[in-house]
Amino acid sequence: MSGGKTLAEKIIGEHTASGRVSAGEVVIVKVDYTFSHDAAGPLLINQLNKLRIDPAGTSRENTIFFIDHAVPSPTKELSNDQETVRRHAQSNNLTLSDAGNGICHQVMAEDYTSPGDLVVGTDSHTCTSGGLCAFATGMGATDIAVAMKLRKTWLRVPETIKVRANGHLKKGVYAKDVILKTLSILGADGATYKSIEFDGSAIDELDVYGRLTLTNMAVEAGAKTGLIKSDAHTRQYLSDFGREEKWREILADEDAIYESETNFDASDLEPQVALPYSPDNVKPISEVKDVKVNEVFIGSCTNTRIEDMRIVAKIFEKNKKAKGLKLIVTPSSSKVYLRCIKEGIAEKLLDAGAVITPAGCGVCFGALGGIPADNDVIFSSSNRNFPGRTGNPNAKTYLGSPATAAATAINGYISDPREFL
Amino acid sequence: MSGRAWKFKDNISTDEITPGRYISLRSNVPELAKHTLEDARAEFPSRVNPGDFVVAAKNFGMGSSREHAPLVIKTCGVRAVLALSFARIFYRNAINIGLPALICDTTKIDEGDQLELHLSEGYVEDLTKDARIPFPKMSKTMEAILNEGGLIPYVEKHGDLLLA
Image (cartoon, rainbow over all chains, first blue to last red; front, side, top):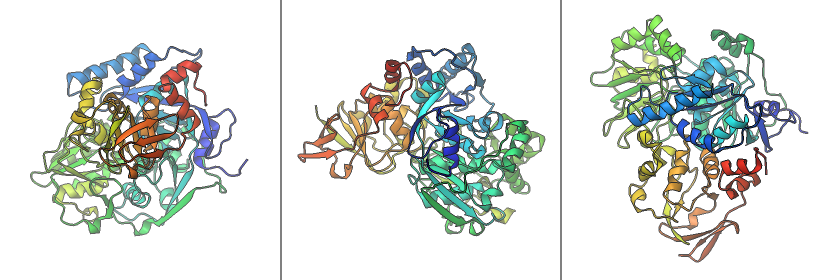
């Protein structure tokens, strides 16, 4: 037996029969939460119906179906798909998070995921929950169908890459900039099959709202998951959602074995921008000059938690969007939306010229809303800018923080948010 | 049976394999499959024939966990996807639905080469070049799942999820 354990090894170990695992082992793990959504649910239910085995004692708790990928439904086909998901959840007494309630990863982090959980879902950004120190990973419909039926799955315990952000983030620089910088170092497949553990003083100082942005985009380096320790910030976050009793401290062992370690000084970091067509194609904003933009999207599971919305509202306080520019804002959940209304954020956004959509995923992946015209240039706070991602292969997308997106919307070209803060 | 090689570059995303804008077709896979890889190579869906091969470079299938990505490729009749490397979720999804995803040196294969798969023998034969391109054995569990035709038949056979 080797000595110290990484966060991934600790959490996976707790979910195996032996109680202890090391990187490289292939193991069966019990799962705490399984979830799916309207974009994968019908295929999953189809697979589920092919499974004739029905083990005694199968728990139906902690199985969640989200209707979030295209809400409100734009077509009769999707309405039928959503109805399939809705009926399946209701007739099997599973949890249903219906249209408008929020993006699955946001709602998981608000209401369900606790430190030390093992979570699997039919969405690549399932790793978002790693910001709460849960081992959370995305899989396809067939894997999740089996996980829902058997309450277990199989996986290879990943090696871990430690990413250490030292120093302190300066004003106008956020978690999004840290993860874009990380992606520029690791590359789009630099962490394939691995876990990324984020550490260092800049991470210690980040609240969970920001940490979820980091772990959300771990998959953009190919990672199985991203993980951050469970500490006082985690406790505070759970308390914000009335779940403080779910908190426990989880730290990696000091003598844990890492496959590699990457360090950078967050104090030197300026706002970062991912250029078309990959989230790892990153430059500091000072090197991104004269890029005219005609659509700005502030949304997705990566950002638009309430903290993001407050920052954006502050930037729009005295400024409107540029004339002719399309500004679309999607709060990540109904809870966030409601707070935007209560705190006067929604009013500031509308005054600035924004279209506010219901909480959902549609704009981010080209399913619904904000589909760009040919040759449009989009600046987005989302996670991906692959060719065709936003629904038109003849448009291109730049990625950055919600603050950078807001500054860009005001000027009509990619702009440093620090001039507005 | 041999088939034609369709070459693709590094980092083909699931957004290019089956774009999100066709989300309304996800419950109609034969229709969805008519758009397979069209953003990467527009002629692919109309010209691909059963038995052909998708031959990619690094990190094929990066991005989303949508299982429709390997599913539409399989629906086009593609015999196997060959790549220098795969994104994790795509790889697992492909095997789970019984589509061979094989890691091998695709740099030796040119566009249009005629290929023949020898799955149990562990190589692809490039008939055009008269060359054998070996691929390493996949993990035991992956191999067992593929041999059963996917994860559902595998679990049904054993009555449980077991490691091979």
